[in-house]
Length: 178
Image (cartoon, rainbow, N blue to C red; front, side, top):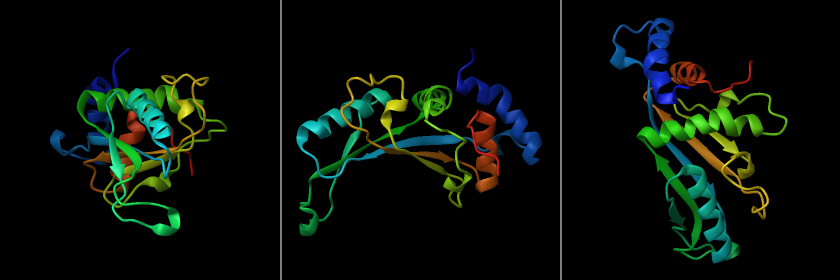
């Protein structure tokens, strides 16, 4: 079975060139990076460590802990407290993660009817939210104590929403039919 990167180079580029009417192969939209963000809120250090380890297992790369920029007394939040973790994937790791997301994780979402096409911004990037990290087969469901959501942002070189949608559809993302 070919990897997603090989599929992009051998099939998707030619398909998008014909579909979008692009003469130059270098102008065809491509993936730049994938950012996985897990907002944890105010938790104790053990829970933050466990969730960070789960994100490491999912992404295959150690995440950066994000900290609060301002103190907010009503939320008992102090400046510098760890409130989340994020990881930026590029290159081979990015393609490998997307391959696992498309072929293994998304089909495991309960009552799945396709991804929404409303997650595109005006510059051709796509963001989707996942409510439960147990859809990733790398994690043992018996070890997970509570469900934790995450945001996955796919950054592309597409110029608009239509190009980005065509790219992700060609890569195999299961979007809902309108």
